[in-house]
Length: 276
Ligand code: PXL
Image (cartoon, rainbow, N blue to C red; front, side, top):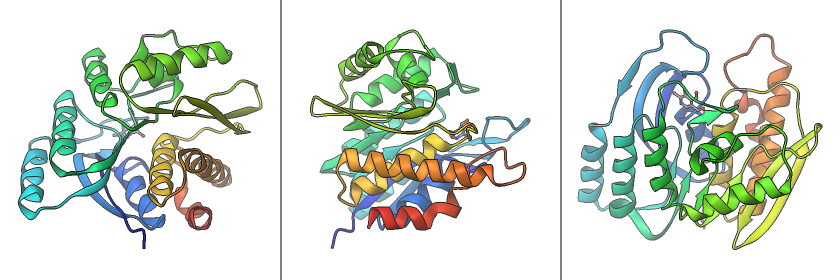
């Protein structure tokens, strides 16, 4: 039976439906063993709450890694999301070198920006470090904003295929092997995801919903990782993740005043069916 073991490294935002509180249930629901390395603990995510706490767990990361090495633990894939500092990116590189199997997949969501702006607490130095992590990835999953920061391209809300092609070309020049570019919208009523794998461009287009939710990038990357590790092709995993996120956003719109995240739990049953 295909029962891979994934390690995901990102923060715990205690409230906020993002990062590890999404990755753990979503990848587990796909039938994949999900091990975690929390990089920080925050009371909430940073996107709209005021006065959140932040406990940096960077110093724990090499200690945890050392213990895993002693135990001979190895992972079939490493998936990174929101990381709190440039130092943590360095520790992730060390994880790739020490506790990942030889052919392990490295999946990097460079979670650091949206809507043309970096998230609170990030700067150019962090972006530079993130480029180095992307260089080691089999798959990177940036949104357009993150792609622009990684490539020094101008952020645009309206663009054509030539703009997307150039973004992808520059992302590949960082050294990553394949690119999953999210939130690519060529028409006002649709959006979609570009899967650029083995030099081939494929686009999965779907409905664009009027309400957008915080944390959907994390839900997307987690579902992609789970489906991919369960044996789906990258394009199929990208499609499943997109359909799942659309369902999550639709269900969230039915709720009263649920502003800080997407109700991904309500659609986990659909995800399980799509992955099977
Ligand atoms: O969803 C990405 C994310 C993860 N973790 C924390 C965040 C954010 C986005 O704002 O603040 C702590």
